[in-house]
Structure formats: structure tokens, C-alpha cells
Image: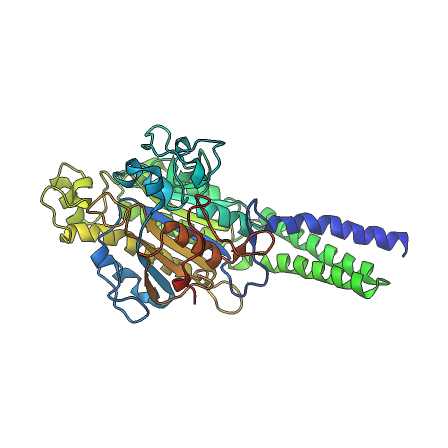
Length: 474
């Protein structure tokens, strides 16, 4: 072998291998050979549950009608999976202080574990280290990451500009700049920082793209350099391949195929568009309602996902004690109980569980979720006509089940878009499983495995619950 050809090939390997390592997260890896797996995961969370009888579809299986709360997703019902009555049993491991009331439920629902201070021994996130106690109101950080973060680490590639897009809707009217999430965590004591100001979020996410939807030249040059590097790597393999034996050629060809896949995964920037009419000034948001803010944040999140900015998108509804919905009947009801949403949610002070204003408040979050799905579905991604929704795993969840009480025995989740092997157009009653099984199911739907390619069998509190929910896999 000539020295020059060897050095050219070696240079290709040195450039290519660091890119390949981007596919692996610290605990999970993208499954190889998963046909049609989603490219991204989008999580939407809100507080205080729902009214389960009007959330759950009329029957399990695929022959059902939607309840009044879930009716807004009717246009997407054939691309939705409804999971109802799912108990968050990990809370019982922590003791009654976790089972009742609000503390620790938001933090547990997507992490599948308890608060850090409830772990003794070496502090490892294992059921044997749990010391039953009451959640500490001053140390409410879970002992592990949320499922979206772990999946996102496996989906993250060099084509993304950041690991996640994190937005929030402030409930109490107007906007905040930045807030710490109560649902989403990168690890113990590391809550995700959410942008609750649409103007600031827009400026941060779409810097480099002008208001007419044209990509800034410097931004395009960066993408061209990424592709030109991959082309050079692939060409160097061709040169190196000459004179190798059959076994070495096969090894090199397999590696070149992976480099080619990275190139294919780079987002088609020509189809990247940005939302318009997003105000920058703080005064533009004076008196805004959750309806106003959700509409803006939905558009920003959908376009950011369509531009391939990150593999993870999050939207969280904050401050649900005194929310201003922007729905007159619901806002009047909240005002009638000293501007508190809390007693309405819990059917206290004479409020019936099926009171119209109460149900309409719960329906609001599903309606905004449906609006997000519509934005994602309006953007075509790729030459085959698939939309951003078709390539996304989108999840809606809350910290409680039936809002009438404070328990978490009957949580309801809505999964939309590309759920991989998950069923679509299907309703599953998960009362015989628990939230940890559901979170493991999301990992399977995302096409993510352990680094050795084996299926993930548990998520959250180690040693507590094993396996996904079989009934929601097709």
C-alpha cells in the first residue's frame, strides 16, 4: 500500500469516527435498522390531571368514540394512541407522603423515580436504597433524568444545533423570561430551563434565519462544510479501498454506509421556515392569556422542530393555581372562587366533577396539543411527502389522573405521530401496568436500545418495574 493512500484513508477514519460517536448517549443508543423510527420526541406537560370519564375513549381497542375532553384530536385519531388509567405506583415506594397531595408528582411522572433526599445507601437510583419519607418541599429534584432527555441523547447527532428546544406557557397572565421545569430533568438536581417569553425564544432559536424564511449565508456555509467533510470522508474510503482484501473492504464499506446515513440525516434547509409576527417587546405581552401564549409557543416549537434544530422539543404549562385561560366561561368560573383554579380542579366548594367549566379547562390542554399536531402536520419533510408530525413522537401527559382527588392512580397519556412499533388509532387501559412500564414503552417507540443493541427493559427507579406495555405494541 502506498504511504499517501494510507494517510488519506486514515484521515477519513479520523474525521468519520467522531461523528459516528454522536449517535450514542451515556446510557442508550439509537437502534440500528429500525425502519420508520421517529426522528425526534416532543413532550407536552400540564398540571392537575383531567376528568377521566370524559378523557377516556368509549372502549378499548380500535373501535371507539372520543370523550369530550379528547375530542379535539379527532382529525389525528388514526395517528394517536390513548393510554388511560395508568397508575404511578413508584410513588407508593416512597410512602404515603408521595401518594397523596401534590408534592413530587410532577417530578416523578416522566422520570419514573422519587426525590433525591429519599435515597440512602450510596444514593444510587435503585429501589433498595429508598427510605420512605415525605417529599421535602425545598429539595424537590428527582434522582434521575426524565425519559425525553435520555431518548434525546440517543437521537442527538452533529446535524442538530442544540440538544433541545424548551418552551413554557405561564398561566397567570403575561410572560416570564426563564423558568425551571417541574416535569423535565437532565439528571438529579438539573431541571430543564424553559423559555416562557415567545419573543426571546424566537430570537434565540431562529438567529441566522431572516423573517422571509431565507437561511443566512453563514448558516448555509456551516451546513455546506458539514456535508463537504462527509463527502471527503467517503471519497477517501474509495481510495483506501483499492488493494484491500475482501474482509477489509467489507469493514470499510459498512463504515462508509454509516457516514452516508449521517449525510442523509442532515436536515433539508431549503424547506426550513420560521413563524412570523412574534413580538419581541415585553409590553406586547401585557394581559396575554394562556390561549395567546400557547398559540405562539406552539408555532415556535413546531417550526423549530421542522428546521431540525434539536431532537427534543418540550412545552410545559406553568402556574396553574390562578391561570387565565382566555376562555370566558372558564375564566369566569376561576374568578368566582377568588381567582383560584385549584378548587375547581379538585371538584371542591360545590363543583361537580363534570361541571362544564371544569371539563372545558381540561379540554383546553388537549385542544392546544391538537393545534401543535396541526402545525407539525402542515410541514412536509422530505421527498416522500411525510410531514414533520409523521417523523415525530409527540406525547401529552400530566402529574395527576382524575383531578377530583390528589392521587396518581389513573394517569392518562396521549401519544401522537410516529410511535414506531406503538399502536395507532388505539385505546389501551393500563390499570394492570404502571407509569414506569409506559416510559419504557416510549423508549421502544423511539427506536432506542442499549449500547449493545439489546432492548431496554426498565426506566426510572431501577429494580422496580421491568418491560414495556405489551398491549400497545403492534
